[in-house]
Length: 145
Image 1 (cartoon, rainbow, N blue to C red):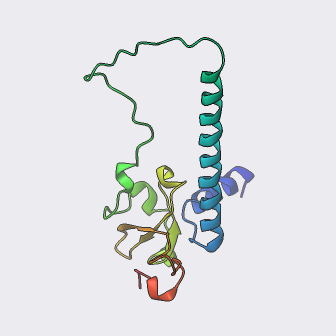
Image 2: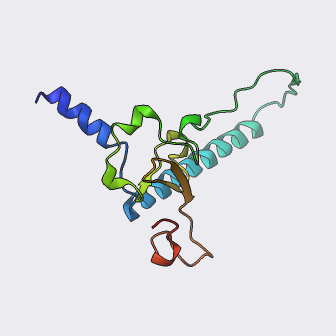
């Protein structure tokens, strides 16, 4: 096989990764980085307002104006929807009913994981601690078989 075909097959496999403690730690790290960036941006804005003359800016807003609401979740990867045809061919059957890292890039910095059933339906779960004491890897918290 060529190097290009090896790379593309590995890229397909990388879509479906088992959800592990390392995956959860990586999500926590991304959340912390995003929080730090927001705090730094707020600090810079506050410093910028404190110096120089203050100018009042009149902001005109129109209610019917279309605003960009930021990134949106992929509608083909919603909870309870079957796995899209474009992903069914690359989904390994041995990963069905096993927690996977979220396949929707919208959730890359949220504490969630997905389980794809044997019927190839997508189910999304929270990876936060249950009752503040049981982590998502505790056997008593398993929502899947």
